[in-house]
Length: 604
Image 1: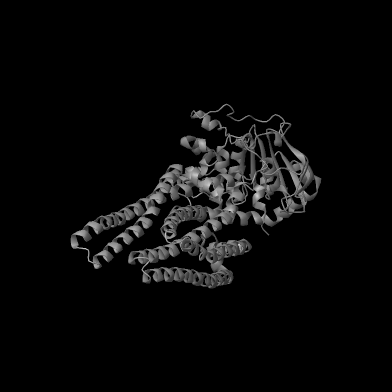
Image 2: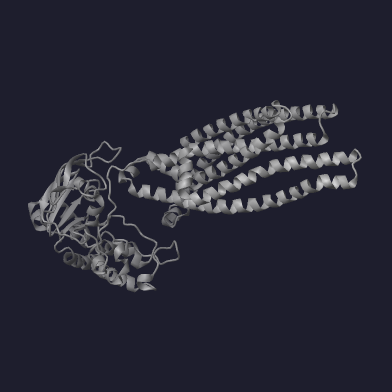
């Protein structure tokens, strides 16, 4: 709970102080009201014993006026507490979201390779939305109820010490019920996190545009909907079982609390009959037990919610405590395009490589996998050279990109950049010198200019740089046809214009080219292009790659043949190397695949 309190304080210290002061003031009002009601009732009882009207007014008017003032003050305080709590809750929620987002960006890519990581992230994200706010509300209710209950106990202890003890003792079974149910709920939710995640996945599949075509074409809607309903039925039954058990326990605890209150009232009634107490004392006792029972229920509920929040917030703090193994300084150096616009740093600009990139004896396995994606792998990528790598799916080609960008570190061997081990370099500075087009690039639901500008955020201030990158990638003609050109919103999420797969790929290429990097890495850069677009783009690419270290991973031999050096990969190893002409002449694996591809593309 201490971590939760610290989280609240870090997020909104000023609002927290104001909120606590208002709750203290609000908590004292019920106690004062009970005492004033006793005074008024005793005054009225005195009138029945023959007190004149003037004497009655003298006794009753001030407590009655104060009661009215307290009612008004309670309304004002309730409104102020609501306002302060809203501001505090919004600030707290933004703070927690910021913590989660920063941590998610800082963690290694390996975090997303383990299913238990998704379970932890799911619980942390859900708890981030609800539990800090619930903790805040429960702490306030607990503090306010405790203050009021202490005042009620002081009023009762005047009569006899065992009255407040009876009041408190009657609430202990309820506390046991709350603690037991909260522990069971936490265990149940931990066991069913994967099921909850799967229901979200199925819901997304049934409602997302990306899967809409196949859902209809292959009539998959009923299949996915049935799977969703089965999982929801399982989760619903589990929650219902917990709720039923809780209800039975709460009824038993409530009966014990009711008997305790009845015993206290019976004792006070007996004293009134015996003439040892006045009617106002009986009313005070009744109100004290009524308010006390309600306060105890509220207090127990708040304590249970605090306990629940502490258990569930542990998921959030467990996620936030994870430490990435690949540390980053967070320092970005802008590219040449950004420098042109006055955005500079001590480590800015691109520097072409002297010795290139080398993989030396690299062995790498993905987390949780026993199969090596690369085994004792060695390869040299010379500077000022376009290198192509071809091979079957699963040969380890894309793994090279992830190691080169230091998204992972190899278990054995090393990757060298101009003779320096990548592990000795700052990851952020390294990645600043690499422009990458992944096989499945992200489609940002933003303007065309912003989609390209994601390659170098500093260059967003200059539309000329973005247009230059678009021309280099051959996407300028696509953008010129859009309704608002570079200011056209892309994607359908926010009412924009959608593009074909090939057009999206051209936009992603422009994003990669915007970064004036020493190393260019392209994973299947022409997979969605027709033959005419491929020929045009390859001509542009040769000019762009001049002086840089360029790596293309491709299945298309018509793309690979334009490289200076081609490597054929299989099962994490290099089988053959050479130029297109040399490999065809050698008659090996490359030559066989080349001839087969040419036969498929030639007319019969």
